[in-house]
Length: 436
Image (cartoon, rainbow, N blue to C red; front, side):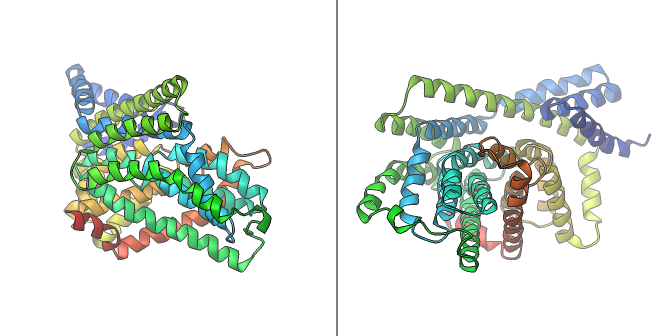
């Protein structure tokens, strides 16, 4: 068989493993080991050792478990509940106010945790019952939770952006600054959608009855719930964006700050610390194994000439650079329907990012577009992760098909957002360039 077919066979073998139910991390490693052994012999298995060492010997990647731990502590000490309650009091009198509050809290959660699961599950438990109770359209309620909850993918600190920066060498601080702009734009689009639907049909998302609205005194008192999370956001993100601290150092401060907020609020217990550590360990272990598997797969794929093959195809593709980007975007969107986002980063970013940079695209812009596409993947049926996070906490009477249908308008807004930053890249690049 011609050598050019081996990279294609690797992907075919990988999808066979996935269809058989093999976890993605072990499927990637297994394909790499099988191909390297039969093509290059037993000594080639040293690649597994060197890849494992390279994946684990990375100081920046320590930021991932620290940000995850921070998210769990903030969720378990009811900071999410406090934030939603405060914004609920201020926006409840507006038509669509509860959905708007859900999107805003999702954006704030992104800024204090960066973990999508925490955002979707937290809003599903707190915001969804409130919207359904007050007669909001079911699909709007579900979509608002998923759209707002996935903003943690873009609004820093984002664990996926940390991982992307580690894999591609793109500035994590630059990704955070651009991600903040992208997240704000998408949040504004979600809110505009809610407002417009409310104007078209007042019964679609009614305002709270007058007797259930908060008084001005209650609104002012609720503002105290913003003080500590706001300070944490300013310190963590400000130190990264201003270059005072590395992402890992800022993540360590954020984890400590989350514990301190729990102590100040008198809600931190040893059980919360233990469960947060345990759940952080399980997710970090999954990411670690995925890095090892993807790194091994990528090394063998490159050794077989896969990167050169993909590059040659891209360079000779009709339609030029924009067509190459469109094909890569569709490929990421397709992968997002079936694979976990960390796997997509580790599998696709090392191949795509250098090719797009060679074609003249700004590497930072490519990273931001990549991460917006990953956020879209969270919302994409049939296997977008946010769909299943939400399905696990919805009340009886709501099925997976309802959740699928509710994601469609927000997927459409994601596509509009990607189109906007493609036509006007400075929308997301001006803040990174200003800080630089």
